Length: 150
Image (cartoon, rainbow, N blue to C red; front, side, top):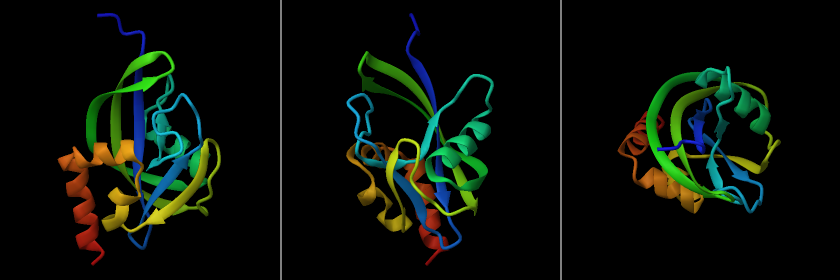
């Protein structure tokens, strides 16, 4: 099977000292599956980067903050539709803690906001919320955040 369209996507469930989670709304675009929707911040792994380096870079570029990249919450394969058809992807979702900086939307995000973990699913856009619903690992991790901050 030919693999000319394959992406590694690294995302971070970023939590601040109050227990809130940072999400970003992607700018409007015809070619991105979460265009105009809120999603968990991250990006594509570049040649020569470790997943942790990629995530720290993407979060700094998109939200202007530094994070401590902690541990992997989930690894999953999925497909998404873009201008060229279907793209196979491998996604690594990490737990991150905010270190420094004031969160501010930049790069390809129109808006960012901190949300309570119990409101995360309802705040995410349709595509990301559906992935969240199908993931026992993500739901379990968020439940742990909720119980720690109750």
